[in-house]
Length: 635
Image (tube, rainbow, N blue to C red; front, top):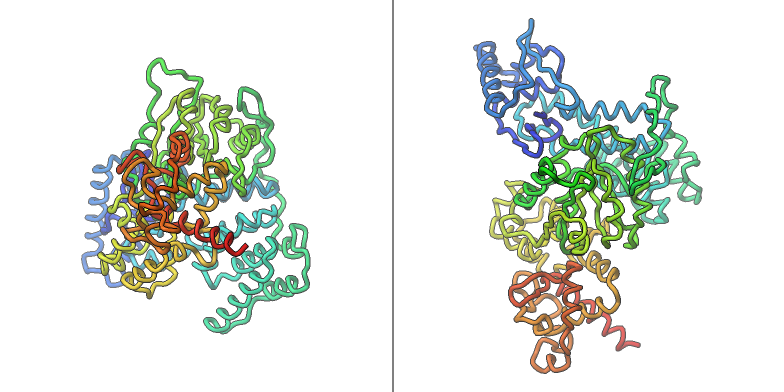
């Protein structure tokens, strides 16, 4: 049994996680776990549970509370951990394997010992940060703990995030650092170091004007909200950008954050840790690569309960009698771009973390330009990240965004691996030759979409306007990536009523489903990149299908926008393609082309008919054709 403190207080037993309901025994448990392996005085525990205004019988009530907590342990099968009554108070014993807070601190200490190897330090810190699972102690209603402990723990996490960004900048991986820094600067607007890192990352990725605009925004915030000027280092950074200075890893700014030499007590390299057997041969262990790293946590994960439970059960089940021990277990998650494949795979990887002591690794199988990476390249990264391993310990690989089966087959050799593959493609050939289980994802149900809004926006805001909330999910077509972008935009506009957001989104869903400060996060951009990956013959066929009549799909498909609307480009498509006259000009799409588009995740199974197309994708395809036709007319 594992206690999860870095988020809502919960008990985890393998893939099963129980978030404890708010109560006084839960407050008591949180207070003890925050000071695990130390004696916590009765006075402090009483203040944590009842606040400063304690009842006259607080000492006796505390003993009753301890009894209730022990009963709670019995109810949930907690047998390896006990609450000890010691002189002056109580104590609970835990270690890194049984308490995530201690696991986080242990990983941070390991990272510090690796300061001479920035890649290894970065990997270890990311693994430590993956233990954080959401709002800290959200179900622990204690003003004392939130005042005295939550702030301190948050500061520990911020220091780790800051160091991760320093390492990424020092390694020249500025684009990767931007992902964390956009969030960090918005959540912690008064943390100047995050702003300094963000401005540097923008400048070093060729976005000088945006870097200077960010500096002006931060300067205005500091003056208006705090009445102070930017720090000397932030002002020096602005001056360096204006002068066009080189801020590479060897520059003045990087020199301020170079890692200290490794301490003399740092552990020596493990003998024999220079290679790992991948593809049947010993692969050298180079420094870790940006393509492989710890599996990140997924904030506000909701839905997919049946798929998550089935995947967790299969990954943790013992091999059947007589099974081939030379081939790793494989689970394939497939579906359309933006349908939530990666989120599900990463969520499940966290559920089964206790079953894979050798580590859990997320491996990006495509480059930023969408081109696939080779199996040899990935094999070297996996070997570097996992190390030599220990006998009997299993590791879990999440191979994310696989393009074809040839990328995966050479990796399916070590028996101490389990593999989760995410792909837009069906990869039927891989399943035919290597076996495994397939989970093909479709859009959320109405209940799942509503649950996501509740988790992301909060019960109070959503339940105040439930009809508007459901209307928003319909306008998003219950498409997970669209819902994520919508909730991100609504979180940055807390004063916007959901009813007003319905009108705002309904005017032009595709234009609104974009993050203005991160243009890469947009539904249209996602679809454009998906079209760019297709063979030109297939992309042209998909554009014809989206802009043409329903008959092109071989059934009575409905050419409507989200929620039954015709969409901003009109129901009939360009030039009246949806009408009877338009059908005469549209020859049928060959069956093999439809099959290939379905296999690529861009057509879904019916009804109606054997194929259908998602409403948002149809609207995007119509708009793309209209824009292209206008350009052709101008020429």
